[in-house]
Length: 257
Image (cartoon, rainbow, N blue to C red; front, top):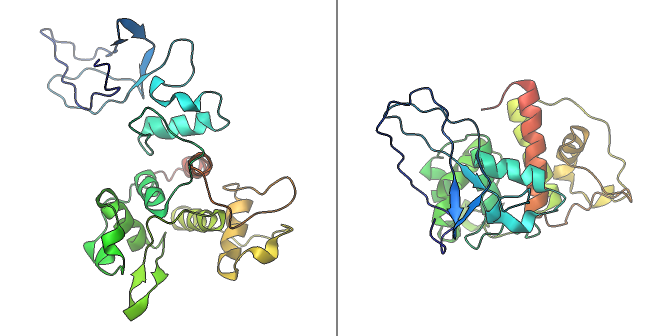
């Protein structure tokens, strides 16, 4: 493996012998040192088949893949790693995940679109945005899909258009609202009791029911002092944990996409 690149995006593997039905394993060598390696799931050889394989490389005596050393001993490492393995979230090219970085609306739209297998949204949803030129190209399809499904909404703008504000960081109240919508669209929700957060008055009226649903279902939790802190910005680690909780609920209900 090249020392200046921790990933090879495409690798062709072939054999002179028929290995149909055999399990495929990988060994990765970095600067002459073999590294512990596994794949996300068992890979069985099938002649002439093309398959995308996630090969995960670990540093010696470490529990976190070499590419994301900043997750070592992090409180959310397990949940983050599962999303990484499944291809729902990604790290940065400098071999870090940066778990304490905040997450933007565009980044979250991308994660949510993958998790729920929303596919590509219609271009008309992007065309309706007042700030379409601010939307990064890599997020076009994801933002169109979350707008089309109603999971994320835009902000009212002039001339009847709306602004998505892709670079705006996500808050706890916004994340709770989106996750509760996802839950409602997939497994349905039921009336839940009132929240007893000491800062309940700071939760916007439009989000109160969603916060109740999200907290009652275990998607998001309050703090030990009894507060919800609705306007706190959400980190990449916190997002991963809450998305993983959503996946666990969908798996339990048997409605994973």
